[in-house]
Length: 414
Image 1 (cartoon, rainbow, N blue to C red):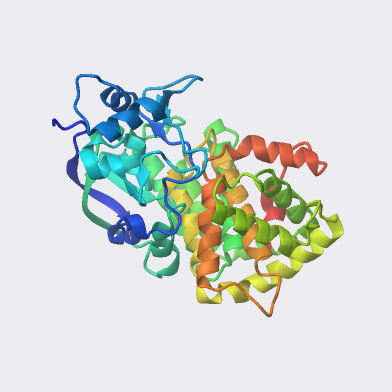
Image 2: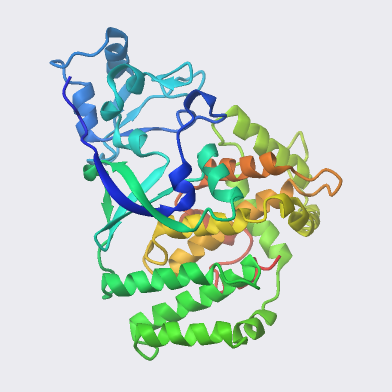
């Protein structure tokens, strides 16, 4: 049988934890083949449905019965979907916790989605880079627990050239300038002596100023901008700025609860439903109606937020490494229409995740262990990682009485 998708061995740059990753297959506690509509690219779909090709009869029957072209705007990369089993909500090709396609006809026959997951691979400045999504439990363990997980290393990877995303110049900047900025942002988020929310505040100020420079509203020059912000950090001016930032716990609780609540009943997996139900219970929701008193919500959130540092003592890198992973995956701050929009996306995700972690930390006598914390990150990523949070966030703002968010900084202090 001829090769469907060619792979190349290339030298790539990636966080150290990526080098340790291996899919654990049937041993995975929350398989990637469960609860998602899996996209199939056009090339793979046409191969699966080609009557001239030989496949094992059982597999050929599944191809004919369980794959459908997308009804709305199919693209070359997202051309069709596998139709999940209505009873289990699993991919129809998942058999005994193993992929029948991979097992019976080979890895090169997998769709690009299945081959790549949980990897994000791109070409930037002529170099290949890779990171992993933390909706994969094994990737989350490797990325969130080790101190050196985000030291960058080079190594050999197998990639599909056809599935590589390529980062082009943006906003009138050269790729070298873009690289200089994203390295600065990444280093800023690793600044010692500042809490993670404080680093995020400074990062937001930088992104706003970067947008102003690019719009011609501030003195030009990327080099000057980087030098000025480096001075702000090293001189202690950043600490003075942070002292003016005041938390708004009521707004945080209501906003992030509103966003969380939109997906509370859509986990699409029994284990994820258990997690969502336990969070609702911890927040004080009525078990029959699911309704929650706003005052109880705010008080519960504050209590959980206060206990969270103790809960995270066993996993001190968890939140920082989550943010770093999102930034590298987004090619931050170039993953949205503007630097500040990309920043808001990071803040929203950070805020919802911290909300969920705080909820499971409400009881100071029964704080979550390492496994529960990791599972919360995985569940969060499974439910929210692939949503367009911009529309969801704007809807949530209106529900809590705001038309738009002028300043995200009140969402960050803990």
